[in-house]
Every structure is written in structure tokens, then in C-alpha cells.
Image (cartoon, rainbow, N blue to C red; front, top):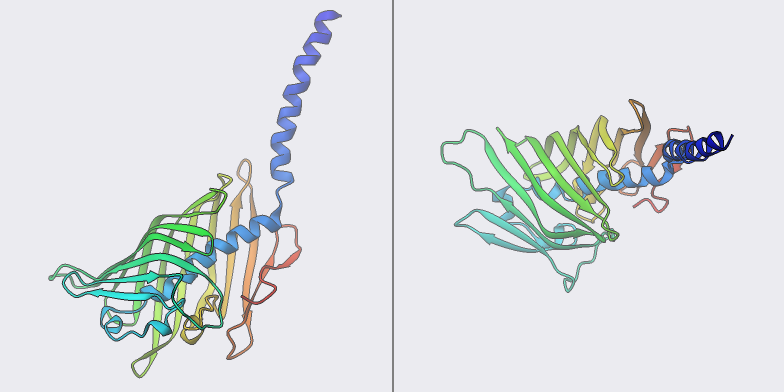
Length: 272
């Protein structure tokens, strides 16, 4: 009898431990997870416009028409553009997203290259309170269609929680005269979140940005639909659906998510 009791004492903690591991998946706060995925989507969106401006356009670019009004420095020898986001800059825009640090765009390519290739590097860069590190690479055979490819972009929160992600996209630029008016994108993002889970963001419908909204520091797409999937234990995954909705001709966009349990959640009640 004494041996049987001791055996039960040893077994109970093991069973409790297994139950706790299962509960980690069962009790995941899907609303918090949705917010984290939404933030990754915003990180990709917020700096895209800076990379869609060509070298020739930067030579004539007005800082006041860029989100957060960065200081623009141009090195014609290296064909580099540095955007420096300074706290001292006076910038009157509708959107209140904050940035600091630098974005470095390098347009220096081999003379015999058929395609235009350029990169955008995050240099001690912060979007809000989250830091972003890495390099995004772009290429184009003409002035209207751009391919994007990046790996190991890292977003880190104030609490040192890191998400690392990769992505591939195709962007279509639409002009009226010499002015870029809209940007339409399709692609996907995949990576590992702060909890160590694999995730994927797929653009189910074209992501459409109005450039006039970007110029007011309003960064969310005017229309789009995304599917998000996050791994769980074993081979299962949790699936989210996100739609961006705005009124025609307006820059205030609402991000509506359908959670894995079927509930609906407005991720940005203020439309920003």
C-alpha cells in the first residue's frame, strides 16, 4: 500500500503538468493574439510608401508630404537616401503615428543590371514604441510593378518580446500624370511570434493604399482582406479573418477581425 501511495504522488504532478501544457492552447487570449498580428500587418504597411518612391522622385521630394515629415538627406555619389525621423520636427498631419531613427534607401545597382534593385534598411528605427530591424529588398523591370522580398525582419516591443517574419509581395503603382496616386499589393508574410508559434498572413484580396492618405500619416489600407493562421499544438492552427473597411474617398479605416471562436473584434476603434 505504501508503494502504491508513493506511485500516485509521483504520477499526479506529471498529469497536472500535461494538463497545464494543454491549457496553454485552450486558454490563449485570441483577442490579444489578433492585436499582435494586426501590429505585424501595420509594421509592413507603415513604411511601404517610403520604399515606393524612386530615386528620381526623392531628388524633388517634399519632406512635408512624407509620413512624420522626416529630414531627407541625399548622397548622389552612393545613390543613398536617408530619412531621419527627429522628435524636434514640426509636422502637422492627421495621423498621429510616431517614428524615430532612420530609414536608409540604397538605389546603387550594377551598371549592367536589367532590373532596378534597391533596399530599405531600418537603422535604430522605432514605429511607436516598438523597434524594427532588418532590410527589405525591392526590384522592378519597369516603373509600375515592383517585387518585394524580405527575411528576418524583427519587431521588438517595450517588454523585449520579439516577432521575426519574412515576406514576398508584388506591388502595382498607379499614376495620374507624374503623381503616384494609389498602390495595390498582393503577397504573404510568415514568421514566428513572441510566443514561439509559427504564423502566416495572406492577402486574400488586393491591398489598396491611397497615397494621399499615406501623406497624412494614415497608413492602413483603404480596402483589403487578410487571412491569419497561427500554429497550435500538434498540426492544428487558429485562423483569423481581417477586413479593412473605409468610406469611399476617406482615409479613416476600420480593421474588423473575425476571431477563431467566431467573435468579431474591431481592432482600431478610432479608425487609426
